[in-house]
Image 1: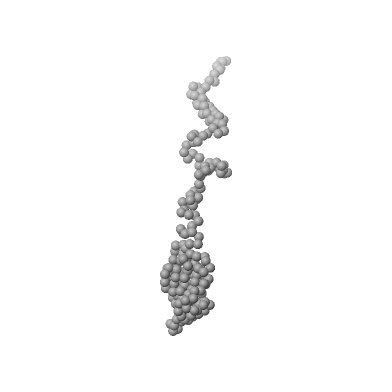
Image 2: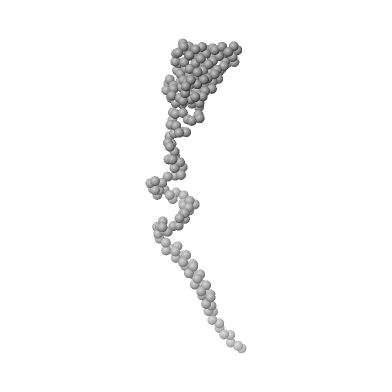
Length: 200
């Protein structure tokens, strides 16, 4: 009977090198993860744009951690506005460019008909909130001067109520208009007609 020689189970040099490389690679990662201490990563260790929004936990950035001059993107737009309290470049109470600047509806039968008498009437004047901002003066039969205090409106449209009533408005000066009222049947100027006026 032949004797079987025992073979030694020695690894080959290539296998040894492969295992060393494997353990070095594994050990290196494990070592770095274990070796990092809290607060050991500084700003200088981070590449630019390495920390993105999705890598920051919700609630991780609080107000005390923000720089004193930190501004939200939407707030920058408000800061760059000439004045956030203004609308269309005009402060509250001023007239907005391109908007309706004044209006009124008045029954001329209800105002003092004496020629030259100034009547204060309810209406809208974007330039003034004073109680007497809107006035109407009876200039002649069927002719009324409507004035909006401090207003620069230079275009107006008038309309009348009633089947036999017609009106027209003409600018006298900015914010002031001559409104004429007449009967449609015979084109005679007449008082006592209700009309509306809107000015731009």
